[in-house]
Length: 301
Image 1 (cartoon, rainbow, N blue to C red):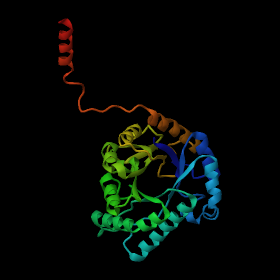
Image 2: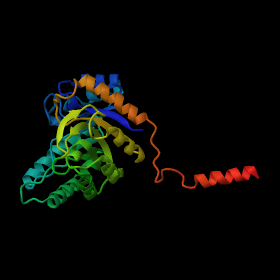
Image 3: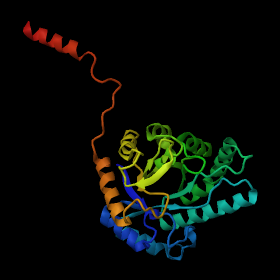
Image 4: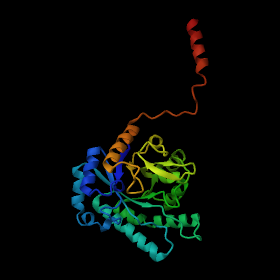
């Protein structure tokens, strides 16, 4: 059964205690921390780094999971010194996740660097850098999630990055809002990623005919087909986390965080609990009329 969580990006003004209490109250299973108290680099947040046991007790007391820590570091840089710095930031976050009992760290796929840096070169460079982090991740028992975004929003690009790393400690985080800016729908993307999916960000928005994002919408009211995404994930037997998330911390087109999260939980839970549509290659049994006729003739005899 899929689990439901939300990102602190949805509620940037809330402190950690409020987030955990609201998650428990609204029926969420877990929380992803995307910065805290205005600090994007979570190892620099004193209440996390200095008091990990208290943080673990806070989550356990409310039966809410600290699911994921996000990092603003990426592996798309070209220079050796810059890459070493980014890896160090990721390593700090992975170490903090291990101390907090948090199973995932998430990062963005990144961007190409300048006009001489082609998509293929950039993806190969990022994939190689991801692979070099496997010993660190294995040592700490933490999985690194790479989210589509930046210049790599499509599923085939994300699949390449994760596949190049070639280890279960590197998995994919899918965000359909990001994919829509690359003119890709979930019906193609999710089956392609398959078992490489570790987490899915649920985000909804309205897009124009050129796939330009117009405004964010409550779940189920936009063009990302959230219900369809969840149905596809059922078909993939996905048992990971769906995280309510939107890239911008303050969105005028959405209600206040408490209302938005309450509505999102109601909608997502209904989709998760709905009976899955049975898909078939045929509209019906092509032999049904003949079988029915034969059955009738046999009875008459």
